[in-house]
Image 1 (tube, each protein chain N blue to C red):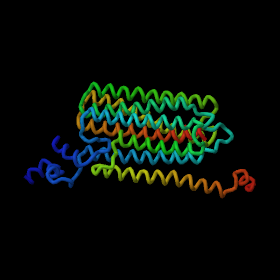
Image 2 (cartoon, each protein chain N blue to C red):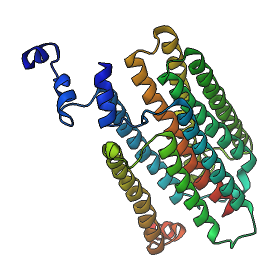
Image 3 (spheres, each protein chain N blue to C red):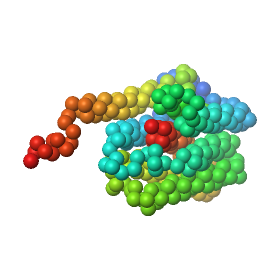
Image 4 (tube, helix red, strand yellow):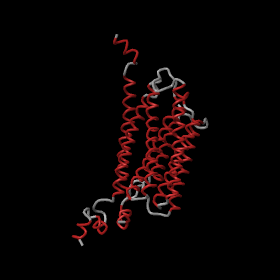
Length: 211
Length: 129
């Protein structure tokens, strides 16, 4: 048995199935773990922006502060969009696992539309702030605000491009193992963005308008 | 290969992977997560604008609710749990959290300290003249 296994199974995965815990993990686990580490490093990067924002919170240079600028109704709608799109993405992962093309594409389309709605509201908010003379060059506080929230928005934009390529890949190639791994990474990315948004709306908007 | 995948599935978890349960239970899991997240979000939005609670407690309440909601997202959406098959993911998360707290806490601490001990900026400018 051992010779035959060694030849058509160079990584001894067959042995692992007999032995148990030793040996390399499956590709899906390694891929997911690697992407999880990337996401954690992304969160560390966001924590730097949060630290910069917290330090510069009072440095408004005589300009407007958070309480005058933020519209909490907008933020509530944005939060609802992102939360529901995270849920729709979860539905897409279930559809991917049971290999239902129709439900996968429907759930991904819903995820995409909600993500685009979030981006549209955020873009509108930024344009409004700039039009009122509260652009990123007004004060250190606003520079930090636009960097932090804009960085999250940039991640969402990149996520939507990734989402569209995932829809196309599943449509063209079906639920192959490598496509499933890519989708696992996409789903992790999209849920992680929602976690970062929780920090953004709590720290930036709610604390900003409460204080 | 599929048999092998099954073996791995019982041994270890990729982050984002769930245990093998029926579709209905998985949807239910996401629904519970969504409901908890909505309740926590609604509470923090309500608390931010209310006069009903002692005002200095509001920032603390918002931060606690945010941390709780992040936990809900991690467990119900990313499926990072404390099960034996999830150890690597949790260890990586713990290290990430350590760095996040060092960066945020350290920055705030040092900058507040500097702020306290340094002359205000206009006085420094005057000394340089």
